Length: 322
Ligand SMILES: NC(=O)c1ccc[n+]([C@@H]2O[C@H](COP(=O)([O-])OP(=O)(O)OC[C@H]3O[C@@H](n4cnc5c(N)ncnc54)[C@H](OP(=O)(O)O)[C@@H]3O)[C@@H](O)[C@H]2O)c1
Image 1 (cartoon, helix red, strand yellow):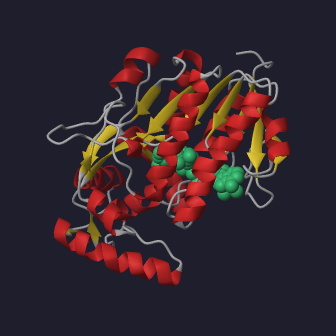
Image 2: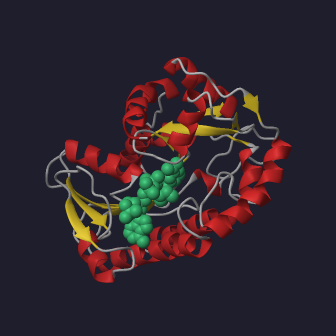
């Protein structure tokens, strides 16, 4: 990679985006990052910051014009905002990025969606890119709509690839990663969930983003997953690797589903997101949401590493920061 290759990264100040920026800089890219005025830009030295948000058309136009690749990662989940804001940022925000790309001189767009727009069909163990699911909640609906717009852009003269990371694990993530680690490390954590999920290290997702840019086919979608583990397995493996004591009491699925509406009501009143925070999400937490990354492995050369490979760095961060 030569220094003349330029990337524009939206969501550059986030968990995944900052890891991507670090890697792009290390690989010799010129990196432009979108940052809101209030964003914590951390210690990412070398990023050229464009200050504004997804709805600031002028900043977006300057950010993307003349770059080889736009990595569009900015987005929010129901952890941090209400459904209207989530939909606006993820769907309408993506429309703004696409418009800036249409108007500017842009190479490829790599859009980060979520595996949540796919689910294993009845009777199947795992889901792949073809298993498009009826969206549950504003987050999935907004990502599904953003995917549709990106596909349309790819089909009408643009060049775009969509990636679908599963649950991302790594240093800097105070949500999913911190919760999972707490379940493995803190004997006081009361319970873990009965379902399962695909856990992927943040550095593996960064590899996948770069491979999608380099080798992905225009208009295609790629699941970027990791190991498929039940919560029980994940918590035990964390506890084993860290010499912690795993949570001992398993909450039955029914109890979690019953707790859903309570958490939903409390979230609405207190303005605080709890996990699981609504009925539908509660029911998802009891399922095994397993994925295969076979297509990315075959077509991009994507590989993921086991949970243990990502633990030392993540635990060092957790012990220091959380
Ligand atoms: N984490 C996961 O497990 C996971 C799994 C699948 C897909 N994804 C997707 O991956 C992407 C990155 O996720 P993440 O975990 O890194 O999230 P994150 O840490 O919350 O980062 C989100 C980024 O988006 C930016 N952003 C939010 N609203 C914005 C707006 N209106 N205008 C401009 N920037 C805005 C944030 O800026 P501030 O710094 O100012 O807040 C931040 O840089 C998201 O699209 C997410 O849906 C994540």
